[in-house]
Length: 444
Image (tube, rainbow, N blue to C red; front, side, top):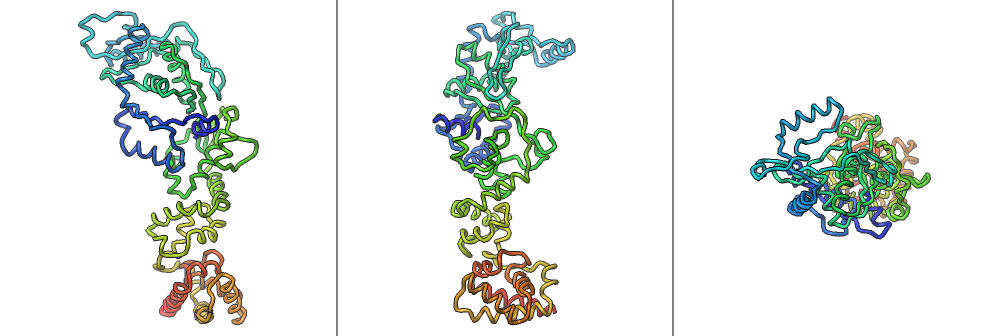
């Protein structure tokens, strides 16, 4: 999202690359999850996405360049021997170095399995002028000679991203600060190839409420999980943009405001904590204020996931307007609105026991007759009819409205009763009243 905002603000290009060199993890399901999430959030690339694995030949070509220039070497040490030498170096508190770093292979050696390593400069300093973290420096003696090509000829991540970023014309790399050490290694590769380094900006990772790195034990992680939980895409973007970035005390932003105001200099260098309650609050603000026509397609999606046909009931916009003050998520709204589109399958046991008593049955019977006599079926008329019946029967409004809610909704909670009756419609309302009275009398 930060990459997308930065590109849009500076009239640049937002690019997507699927780094799928790890073939076991790069399943169709994993790749589709990336594109589904980006599509739902409308973070579309300005060019066709690049798949890293398909560029392996180009990566190997660059490794040949590095071998020819002396910036890389072939390492014939076995994996077991490498592990032993690493353990020795760790015990002696020194950086591991391959015995092949300064040893030329023979013709016979070249036929043996081996990796290709980057020959880093020794006793030097590499500095990354990071846009978020500030200048960060490392001694090259603290960095080992990273593997560029595995023994099966597969390029490694640190090599592939450098080549791809260069070939794709990437000027700015905005990513998590867990890649900060990689930036040092990648910078050395850029320098060895004589290429211009991109500008790096390493943003803090998101932590859970307990201050630990966000993980599955904290709850949902995949973007589409938040859709299933009932978040609007704009609301999720708004919440996420405020994790690590701020613009004064402003909490809510339109997408255009995010683009106009986003600035890397305002990104915090310390980790932000994910607060689900705050995320729900932001989502509720959007539900209450966004044009219901914009919300309707997402509401439709949630109803269908519940097995409800949105065509079998009132207009979605009207339902959204009636429910959005009391629902924090679209999932909650769909669950509380399903009665408008699907037939009731029963009544809340506790609510029925409380409100379908003798007084409740009498109220429903009398109200049923009053509603059948109406010539107009809209919220103002229904409001007057329900209040008029309660007054004429000498009953408090609650003694009428609560049994009525249970009869038509299945529970004692709903939007204002006049809105609920208007949305449900004359035919369904009267049929449910008849059914509720019959049901209650059979159990009296």
